[in-house]
Length: 139
Image: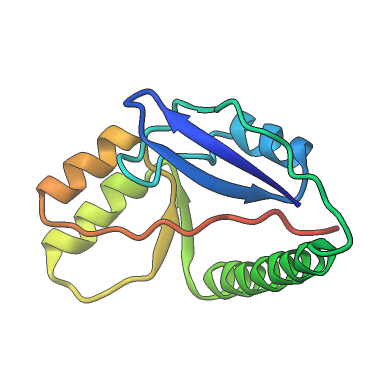
């Protein structure tokens, strides 16, 4: 486990945990890291000091690893549920969700991708969205 202090282009700072530095780089390349305050995907690691383990805090590190594994497992359950019960519409999500919202023909479960600008426009239209961290499946 590694904890980074992240900073977006608007200088919002927040912490985030990753299984290792490669995981951070992989998520950043896929544009899956965003500011928790403004949603910007222009996020960089800030300068930080490494955490040095000694015999007193080694147990805490083990607990954090167990917490991470449990959270990842829970997120994978959510992903499995969404993939089973929702239709994937990819980058057509914005158009499809508007069609559903404004047609009043009932609810339809869909998921897909949007840009930050599309999310903002949907919110202005009164359409609330939820973002789920999309954890990679362990193959």
